[in-house]
Length: 318
Figure 1 (cartoon, helix red, strand yellow):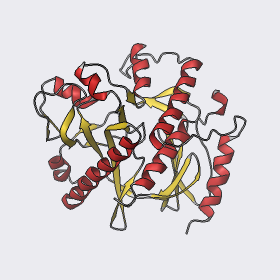
Figure 2: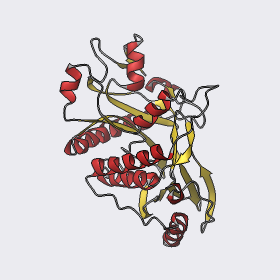
Figure 3: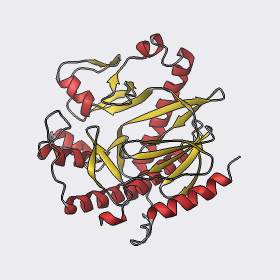
Figure 4: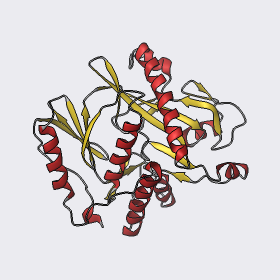
């Protein structure tokens, strides 16, 4: 199954001016004006790229991102221009704000760890007393984080963002408004699929004086979902909530004594678990979008397909 996965790309595209290989995606710059974002089948957890590739994962993430970018384009302009291949998005290259706008509807994950330790505010946002893990906040809270090129992101308050001139005050106010509106739309779309959008993050940039929503939106790599059915009953019983995210990968690694900490050794990941991850990602796609996943032919040369489609699309750019 591994042979049908895309580990990396090394294209020389028309008008290419730069290329960056991230943890999961390869990003090509065209004429210093456009970006070609290619989602590979690499997978990361705990800020570490795992030594396996997951068939179809890149296609899943690309198609979910495209689905939600198109579904939110009326709220805020976004960077997407076209998707010439299931693994490829092409759009505007923006000057990126080095802040992730994290918004949380429930006290989960990092927020719960801080809350359990006694904190009653996170990034300046209040968290009321009396909450148990996975409870909803009275209203969603925005907890920005610095976007670290390497290592872990760090919490930051809106006041610190403005004081450090990471985002101008008027732009931050607009971005915060966009964040709340996007989360409300994502919540409504998730509810139609029997899901609860728990938390997510958005990234923004600017081009020609216009703020754009960039990167991916509402994907399982950037968001956490609960299944709505049985949620209230599980909360009453203090039971573990069913999640729709890649949390199951992190849980497997934790069970095998790996959390990306110094001195820890990456466990061997069996082919059976790789296949399970692939199937879980396909299920994520179908549950989130309500659409049937189109699996490419097993013998297809994914890299050649991507290069041909992307090259043709670049030739159509202004």
